[in-house]
Image 1: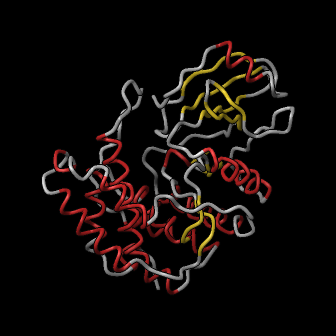
Image 2 (image 1 turned 45 degrees about the horizontal axis):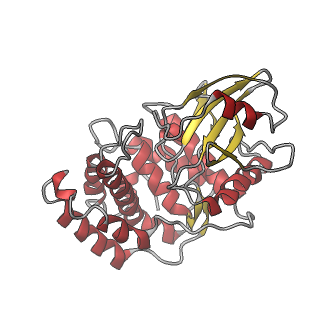
Length: 321
């Protein structure tokens, strides 16, 4: 369970009392997620999600995240929206951590997405990109190309204990990406973490996007690359081009890609695979003592990276140029 900070009944009652949301009835920790502590909170008026932001989250970034959700919701995108306290604040403090209460989004994530789910995701991702074009706040991607080598250096001495030769393989990939990373692609606000557990469906219709705590400004097509990695590989890590084609069809039906984005997609997919390999590797080797969380296997993304290394055209993802 991803709960790093335990909350007492007394603390939570005092926190909820600052909001016009009714009387606290129950709360429980939420297992999903590895960055923050999350609770499902029930009052006598509704359900809410309570998030306590842990040390890995920069408190200075929180206004960007919370106001982004307000902005996107105002543009018609379905996502949880922060609840303001009686004092008009979106952010409070609970158990010594910055904390926010957000609306509860109906729906469930899908464990094994089908092509129709992927197409729905593509449409929603493109709609989110368009809705964010006039968002005034900006946030640099702390886990972009420039952050990958410093992140790797924190695990480099021990990474071969996870897999023999892993260090040399990552070093070679970093060298390649630093020389070949695309420039001057269309940029804007991206989600940067649209894994299946961050996309909700009701009756196979997408009901909303959640967990915007990696959102930032970056290449829009990089968000697509992240989703191709997260949604289009089967359990045996074989790439499913039918799912990829459906996702790209959905996306381009709302926001067509430029020629430069088309050409850059294989490199972006390699970068996205490496980014999650590196963060998973770090987490695998650095789980905080006592944390109720199981780190995710970094080897999954090494295998995905190796697939993308064989791709020389976006046509391999089912995208027609």
